[in-house]
Each structure stands twice: as structure tokens, then as C-alpha cells.
Image (cartoon, rainbow, N blue to C red):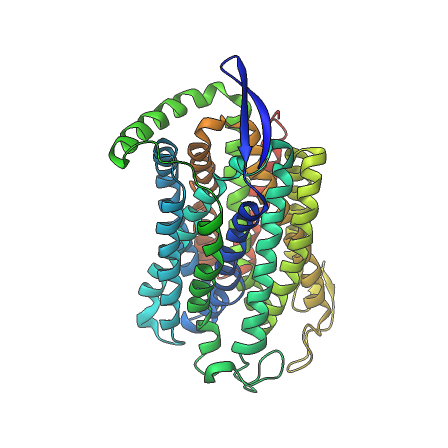
Length: 461
């Protein structure tokens, strides 16, 4: 057991930290949860929904945006309340288990999203919203376990390693889907030239739809070590008493927040740039599908490359976090995102930065067009910046927040990450629906990153 001395009540206390097995098992939560964000919300199921379930890609992007907005609003309203109750009760794992079950159930229901069947759209969007709520709330309580695992000077490395491990899990899940499960409807072959496993039918897009059950099974398998080997906080009081005390504590925290200027500004900045990042990841695959006509193989390969970039970005960001501080890592990540997003908006099927280029050859090799390759490079920049941004944000919160109310503040952190998270997707959905232009909807995200960066500059660590 590692230990570190700290001041409390005028004297020294010794805080014990668990061993390597507990830390590694905690890290595997990111591995377990990442396929939901990789396979369903970004690179496989969301583009499949927009292109083959919805009447057309623009309407599909709009509908997906409205569902994302609804889930974000529910998360925003409930996360600080649940975090306060969890702090009062002391336990984390029961919350992770309960919300993890929602992730699993909602994901498995994706299997029923058959192509061209408009009757399943409401149920499919409801299942997506339920799974998203489960994934996000489970993450809130998993994050709240961090201060008990390692000393403060190793927090950045822990956070970055968690994100990097999650990206690797996302890569492997994408390789599994593209290489062995999802085949092109044109030739019936997967990315590796194989017939799909389990006889999955390419024509009815069973390879795309299997991502839902796969995500649920993957989560159950890889989250299990955390429940077995990572210690939880001890139970402090019964749930009814915890609810009463938690709500009272949340009211007190909200009253004190204006006096904690840097923490309040950081939460506001996180609210804005997280909205932009969530929207960018949610619609990146859909945007590529609409711009270049990509299907599952192309979008999934694009996702693998982004995840590889994200893995290295998160790992390097964790090291820079401990060395330079999380604020500088966040600022650098936002600058990269601003540049990459602005450049992507100037890339079209037959042009790059207003310069005409040859369009992709129909039926040609993967990413044969110059514009497609430019999109790949810019997408990798986004992937490399997204991981450090999220990992450093949670370590900056830990540096700024009171340690005895960490789950409550992670609830507020989730609140600020979600309270307006419905605005980004909603605005993208509305603008896309009104203009019938995916590019017009995506252009809104530049404002989110610019404003978030301006506010971050006023935070003092």
C-alpha cells in the first residue's frame, strides 16, 4: 500500500493508496465504456442511422441531434444531485452498476434498427438516449474514485492513461467490427476481405446493428475487474439519510460556488467547450458520411486512425499534465481543435481550402481523393487533441475542488459538461434542418471552442 501525508485538523494524517491491481482495474473502466462512444455515437451506428434508417442524411443528423440533446438535458439536471447523494452515502460502485445496466440495455436494443424501417426510429432514439444517460452517469461516479487511487502528483498520468487505454479499447472494438462483422453491401466482404462472422447479412446491415449488443457485452466483461479489485468508499449512512444530507450539501455548495471564482469560471468554460467537443464527436462521422458518401468501412477506418491519434495524444497529455499543469494542456488542445475544425469546414469532396482537387474515384481504393486524405489528417488532429482535453479537465477539477465533496463536484462537472450539451446538438439539428446543409450546422462549433478558451485563460490553478 502506498501512503502520503497530508494536513487535516491541525495535524498529520496518513492517506493510504491501493496497489497496482486496483489502479489497473479502475483504468479498465475507460476500456469497457469507450466502445459505446466509438461504435455507437460516432463511427458506426450513428452514421448508419443517418444514412440508412432515417429518410435522408440531413434529417438523420437532425433527429440524432435532438435525441442527444434530450439525453444531455437529463444528465445535466440529475448529475449534481446524484453526485451529492453519492458523497453523503460514501459508495460509488452501486451507482456505476446501476447506470452501467442502462448502458447495456440501451445498447443492445440498437440491434432492432433495421434499414428503411421508419417505425423503429422513435424506439431507437429512446434506446440511444437511455444508453447515453447510463454511460455518462457511470463515468461521473467512476471519475469520483480517482483521488483515492494515487497521490495528487500522479493524477494527470492516471487520467491520461485512462483515456489512452479507452482509446485502445475503441480501436480494438472497431477492428473487430470492420474486420470480422460489418461487410460492404456491394461485395459482401469485410475490411479484411472476409465473409462476416455469424452469417451477418450485409444487405440488412446486421454488421452495423451488431455494434449495440457487442458494446453491451464488452462493457460487462471489462468493467468486472473494477468491481472485483478496486476498493470503494465505505458506506457512511443509509440511502434515505444520504439523500437528505446530499441535497442539503448541494444547496450549500451552490451557494458557496460564486465565492470560488476560479472554480466557477472553469466550470463555465468546461460547460462551453465540452458542448463543442461532444457535438464534434457526435456528428463527425455523420458529417463525413454526408460529405464524401462514406459507409461503414470508410468511417470505421477513419475512426481507427482517430483513435490511434487519440491514444498517443491522451498518453502524452497525461505526462504534460503532471509537468506543465492541466490548464496549459487544455488550452493547447483547444487551439488545435479550433484550427482543425476551421480547416475541415473548408474541405469538400472536390476542394481543399477553395482549391479544386480531383474527387474520389467511385469504387476506387480507400481514401483515394485528396480531399478525403486532408479530412483524415485534420480528423487525426482532432482525435489527438480530444483525449488530452478531457483527461486534463478532470484533473484540473480535482485540483480545484474540495476533496470531501469530490463526487458532488464531479456531478457539477458533469452538469456543466451537459447542462448546455443539448444546445450544441440542438443547434446543429435546427440549423441543419433549416438550411439542409451539414456544413452550416458544424460551423457553429467554432464559437464554442473560442469562448471556452477565452474563459479558461481567467482560471488560476
